[in-house]
Structures are given as C-alpha cells and as structure tokens.
Length: 362
Image 1 (cartoon, one colour):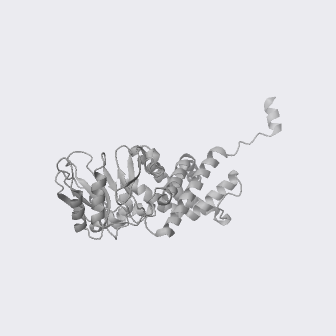
Image 2 (cartoon, rainbow, N blue to C red):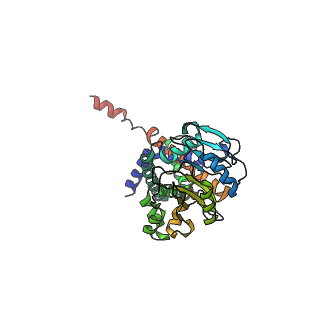
Image 3 (cartoon, rainbow, N blue to C red):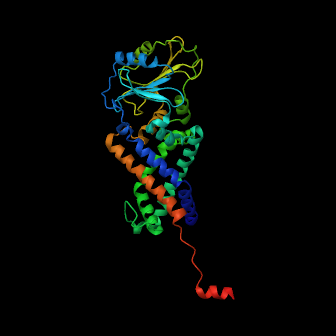
C-alpha cells in the first residue's frame, strides 16, 4: 500500500509540479501588487464620501466604452475603469485618467492575475487549475503520510545540500512537512474558488451547502435597456442609505439588454475586499430592484466568502501576508524540484558486471 502511495505521489509531483510551482510564484507576486504597480496616485488616501465618489463616477462612466469601475480602497488609491476586451484605465479619485491600456498584456498585474486564475484560457483554464488543486491536495496529504516513515532523519533546510537526487528528495520531504499546514490552507481556499462542489463540501460544517449555494447565486432581475445617461449619483445615494457604513467597491453595467446595473459594497465586518453586499438597479430607470446584505447570508455562505481573503491575504495584515508568502515560495520550490528530480535526476540503470556482459557476448 505504501509503495503504491509513494508511486502516486511521485507521479503527481512529476506531472503537475511545474504548474503548482508557477501558481505558487504568480500568487506570491500578486500578494504585493499594490506595491509595484508604479502608477502615480496608488498611495492616495481614500476619499469615500458620497459627494466625491458620485461626482467621480459620473465623470468616469461618461468615458466612451466604459463598462464599470473598481473603486479605490485603503490599500490602492486609484479607481480602475473597465472597458471591453481587457482594456482599462487607472484614474485618480477626482476622475483624472492616470494611465490607460488597450490590452491586459500592457499591465503585468492583469496578465499575471489572468494566468493565476485562468491560465490565459478562461473557464477551461479554471478547470485545469481546479484539477491541479485537487492533485495538490493529494500531494500534501500523501506526502505527510510518506514522511512519517523517515521522521527520524528529519533535517530542515531551505535549500538542498546538493543538487543531487537524494539531496533534493530529502529537502523535498522535510521542507514539505514543515509547510504542509500552510500549503493546505492555500490549496483548499484556492480550489474552493474554482470548484463549487468542493467548496460546498468544505463549508458543510458551517451550515447547509444548499442554502449557501442559493444565497451566493445572483438573483435574476429583468429591466429595460441601458439608459443614455444613467443617474449613477442617485444609485450611489440609495446604496449609501441601505448600507451607511459600507464602501463602494464595484459598479458594473449590464452585459446584455434587460440585465440590471449591479453595485457591490463592502461592509466593515466583511473580509472579502470587494464585499458581497450587492444592489441591483434597473438599467433604464435606475430604480432599485433588490439588495443583498452579505452579513445576513447563511453561515455557510459567509464561510465561503472568507476563502478568497484568506487565500490572497486580504486579512491579517503583514503577518498573514508573510505567512502566505512562505506558502507560495515553498510551493514554488517543492513543485519545481519535484519536476527536476523526477524527469532530469532519475537514477541511471545499473550497468551489468563486466563478466556478465562478456559471457552474454559469447
């Protein structure tokens, strides 16, 4: 049984180790994206009063082709204006465009995010990442089981003593057991965001998965076609009346005729950086169609909403960001060395003794 588990563990590492390593590295880079974007205004203090946000929203949404706004927050002081096909712009909180791009490939933070979440392949890429996450979960659990046999030889090293296969395997084994709890957190929370059945299984201890799934799904509202000049100021005012202490987070125009305008907000008690408190407005009249209070959602849904902020270190300050950095870098090391040792450092077949070879040639 242990021999079979060892074989499956080695093949899992050999086949998906590189992908896990790249996901670990890209995820670690994204933990610090607010520090290296390098656009003037990223460190501006948040101006969240209704008058300022409403005036800026009216100004930015009047830009031809604008489809929505990700509002500035305390960590990142610029609004992100979204257009179609990956185009967008960063704008100051007074509505002045700081920089603009026609494609995501011009902004490293966008294409790295796309790789980490979609492998540049949309929904298909998400499925690949989800499968890799499940394999990674097996990889960690089986590694802990296999380590137990060799626990007496434990030696913690941040880097292999030599780049030989035995040294790499010892480093892989002993580093893996130390970071296993962190890897479980990273892999479980990441896979929850990709595979909804897996997420429902993980939140089952907190409440009914069926109730959580129903609460998470957006309601189906129907309205009229998008008005020529929607009254965004009135929508924001209604949103602030409904959720007085909440921050404005994402404004999105309808994707097709009849869909509503949506506005996401984050209440102070929500961990999710973009919040799940949402309002939907008729695109034609601006009338409020419905609102959802994230803090009133079932406990299972609230547990699901905590997966992303834990995964992306959006809570816990610098302490948790450092913890997740260790997890991401460890996954990068373990995955890359697993591939290296499996495909490039495998032991060569032993040569037959000279006498045996001589007899065989007679």
